[in-house]
Every structure is written in C-alpha cells, then in structure tokens.
Length: 215
Image (cartoon, rainbow, N blue to C red; front, side, top):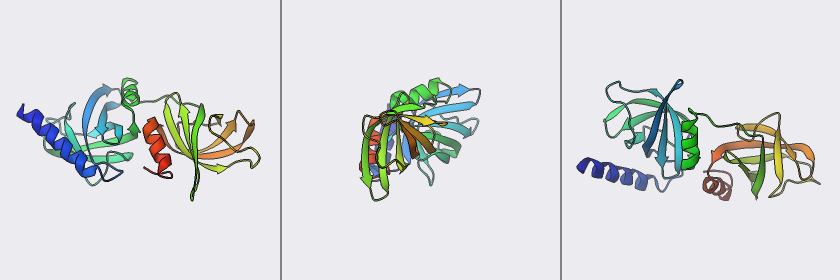
C-alpha cells in the first residue's frame, strides 16, 4: 500500500511540475510487449500517450507496467532516443526510443498490439484550418488518428477547405514530410503540404492548431 501511494504521489508531483510546459519529462508505463523487434512500451503522460522501443536496460532491473519514469535531460513527448530514470528500480541506465507522442490510449494500445507499428494511410479529410503568420495549418482525420500539417502550395482558385476529402499522391498522410495532395472536392492535385505530426488524438491535433502549429 505504501509503495502504491508513493508511486501515485511521485507521478502527481511530476505531472504538476510539468503542467506549465508543453513538453513533459515524467510519466508512467501502462503496458509492455516483447516483439521480434524488441520490447515495446506504452507511456502515459499529461499530454497524452507516448509509445517507445526499449533500447537498453539493466538486466536485473527491467522496466515494468505501472513504474513511474522520468526522461533525463529530455522529454517523453518528443520522438528520439531518451535516457530514462525508473523511479521504482532507481536505475538511470535505461534507454528508449520514443516513436510517437500525443496519442490516444486506443491508438497507443493498437500500436502495441500490432508489435510497434501503425498502418500507412493515403486518404483522409480536412477537419479544421487556420491561417497563421507561419502559413496555413490544417488538421486531417485518417482512420489511424489525426495528422497535422502546414500548407506549402495550393492553387489560388481552388483552396483546400474543411470537410474536403484528400489523398496523398505517391505518399502517405501518416508519414512526416512533404506530400503532394489530391483534393477530391476541387479535383486539384497541385497542392503540397508538410505533414508535421501523425497518429494524434483529436484533442492534441486541435491544440496544435490553436497554438498556431506547435505543441
């Protein structure tokens, strides 16, 4: 009972400390799975769920579900290699590769059950747009979650609009990078967008948009 109380208090303190920031260093492991490509984990943070691959850990101090963890000089909400302090084992010799962030619990668990993979999606629909000083930002719904992007080029007489169904030409709406877009409403294929983040929850995508294209 004391151990569980300590874990809850520690997690609360981490979340409270990070509440003023968009990026979060503390969280807790909710699920793990061993795959042919190594161990995969799901991490709960106050900014949503992150998923990661375990790169290195101390053999006699493995990370486990419910353990509170903290990124050392990094964040659990930014993709990349991160050194982890496990508050349960007190080991700081763990390294994980953060794969995706700001996910819903459902999306994170789906990634885990699929051995650390999402499906690639070409078609989706625009749900919201916003003009910013850094260009037009858009939110795109796909069957694998929400993607967000920046409009790079479009035909002046045929702007993309909310509710328009779009398709990535020779690419995917679920891959970060520059993508050519076919707008099925205007029939224009001369649109280009920069996909900034993928597999997001609706809340995270809309928050990104409300902040002008940042988390």
